[in-house]
Amino acid sequence: MKHKFSINSLVRLGIIAIAFIGLSGTAFAQYSKPYPTPDYTGKGSPAQGTVKSKSNTAGRNLSAADKAFINDAAKGGMMEVAMGRVAEKNATDSEVKNFGARMVKDHSKANEDLKTIAKEENVALPAGKEAGKWKSDKDYMGQMVKDHEKDLAAFEKEAKDGSDPDVKSFASKTSEVVRKHLEMAKKIDSKLK
Image 1 (spheres, one colour):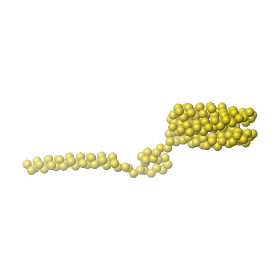
Image 2 (cartoon, helix red, strand yellow):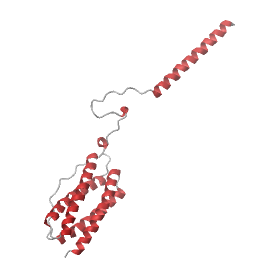
Image 3 (spheres, helix red, strand yellow):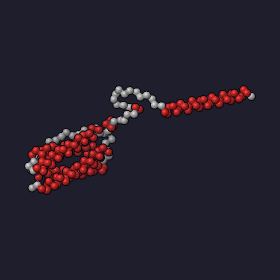
Image 4 (cartoon, rainbow, N blue to C red):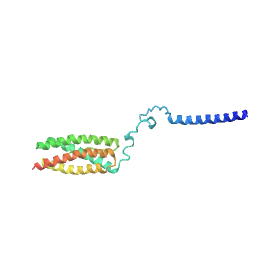
């Protein structure tokens, strides 16, 4: 009888030991973190807890409409800066000169913001163009009214319907500036003869 008892006890102890080893191995695997291997490429790896840069994947998911908006906004912004410089230098009316200076300042900032987004999204921007020509301060301001009406509609549409959150945010923020420019342009244009 004693012999039977000791075999059963040994079997039980063996089963308990195997279960304990199995459970402790599972627990250890769940809570242990392997040592990260050094990253000599500068890119990092997700296992090391690094966040993948947006620039590595960006641009691939950008919609055609968002890309077109970026392209059109860049062209328009560069043209506003170029024309603003000419107006600032050559306009005869002081309000038109000041408006030109404001276009240079505000659109230069917006252009820099757009360049940052374009770089993150891997979107190539168009080259700058020379300023258009106009006959008078009235002609310039009339053109500014038309351009800003068109631009405001495009920026508001992108802010509402765009698919990329960064592009939408840029469009929303910049549409407020464009709206102020439009109000100023209409006011100045109405005073000119």
